[in-house]
Image 1 (cartoon, rainbow, N blue to C red):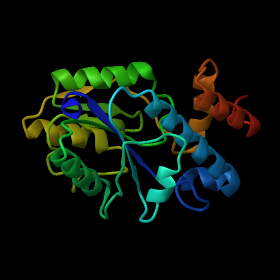
Image 2: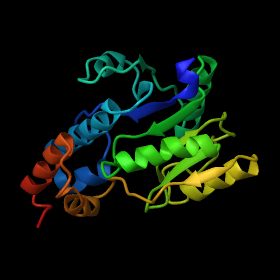
Image 3: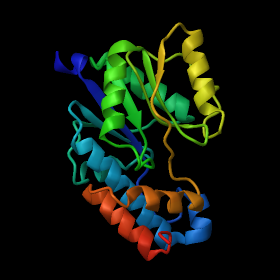
Image 4: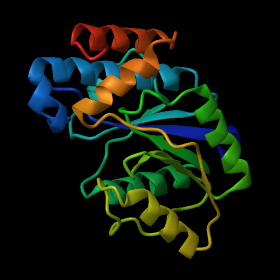
Length: 224
């Protein structure tokens, strides 16, 4: 069974709409520019998923966004609606459902870490052959990606959306007897200060969606 051997990529995302998501960016950029950045960030995630050498699943956050997910320019193998609950609950529920369908190694990403590159994804896939869990530490203490070749321990009570998440996630996995491999730390896009840093990191990035994001950041004055 090919899905039992390959690593399946699962994209957790929110449909970019005005007034929803990226509130810390919106306070400085305004709604129009924030929506543009959100759409471009999602495009970089689709760009990564397009080159993924395994199954691809997209999990939109809001009820009713399945049709939107199916209309995206990249065809996913499945669209799976995120259930209710905190991020840990939602991830665990989808993970259990996918494992029941035969997926054994699963890597979860969001749509706001455009500095992730081919080497990061290759390292994540490789580490799931040697370790039970792979974590992509974020410089703010969160994670940019997380994957496992076993069912997750209980994730409900972890400090989601906080600077304590990575360490808590690593700890609960290790306490459950799982081996954990950490990738090189990266960062995701949460606050306006992240955009200037991103501009510098995208200067030489030739991937088309990254070029479009870079040009947008230049137009907004973040590339000085």
